[in-house]
Image 1 (spheres, rainbow, N blue to C red):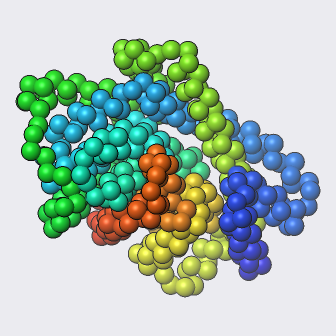
Image 2 (tube, rainbow, N blue to C red; image 1 turned 90 degrees about the vertical axis):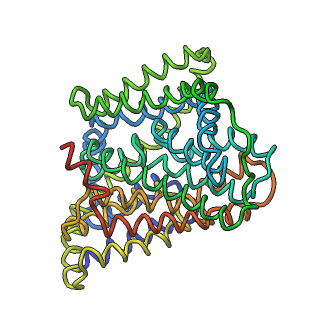
Image 3 (cartoon, rainbow, N blue to C red; image 1 turned 180 degrees about the vertical axis):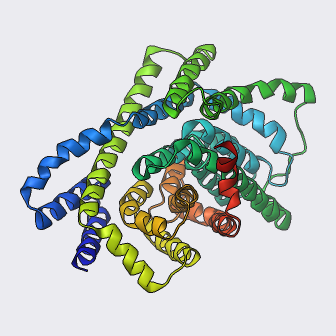
Length: 433
């Protein structure tokens, strides 16, 4: 029992360090070192080097900087602007007009970026200039970009899914396959919410009466081919069995170089900016992963997973009840913690319970990522809200808060759907593996 009490105290200390603004990696590492010193003494710290080598020697982690670099190159190659214009040709006639283009562009860019923040910044930069010249309800515009960008961590390739897979020893290929249908379904739900809102209140969006000629629209479809081609080739290489996720990511980077060259954007200046951004992002992620693995090691040695499994068994909670408890748990935490901090920090505690209750770790990975999506647009710490407001550069943040409310409801609906019909998540992994 003392192990469980000690772990609970350590968890509270770790969250407290995060709440006061300490970096998540430092908070987890400090908690792990404190637990090691209290229970085992200084000698166990000598094992940190061995643990660090075992973690960083995982070939799978090479995937992270490759996918980050892929998104950075496409971001700086100017491909997104053309993609947005092409999508608007076909989606602007729907009730809601260009609001649907925001969602569609976010979904498509998510299929190559792997990051919600990058998607929010990129689509926000392209879209908000267009909306300045049009008559749309601004909070709904901002909300559609902030919410649509959350698809960046659900639609594969997703850096968050890679980290989850590495921390829980879950197949990355299965996680990527599991994210496809929920990602597409959530995209459709976002669009349905926009359409219903505009049909009820037509003043929310400008009615599009003029569209480009069919020949011109068909011609501009070529701008959708670059991100679509990368997605098909990268995912096809993984599921076709002739490339690992790491090799497929490297192939995607090579394709991104070619597309940047074809777009006339390949230069030393562009590559320097892309490489620097990739190094910064990857270093931050690897530090968090190393700290999380060391914390997991200490938690495992203390026997906390077994103690928590016994405690849950004594409570008599079934899988569905536990998931509903976790929904409330992550909703509250998402209001105060950054998403990666929350995900990595809670996996050592939550995962043993999930496995004990017989919940599919692939299904739980998608559930967890959707809860992280919610946290990205939940005030006061939702990162996407501040990214969109930063790109906007004026007005009150409250506008963004109002705009995301219907999309928060959409994500909660999505959680309910995958609980009632888990096949939405598990169908493709079972089909492909």
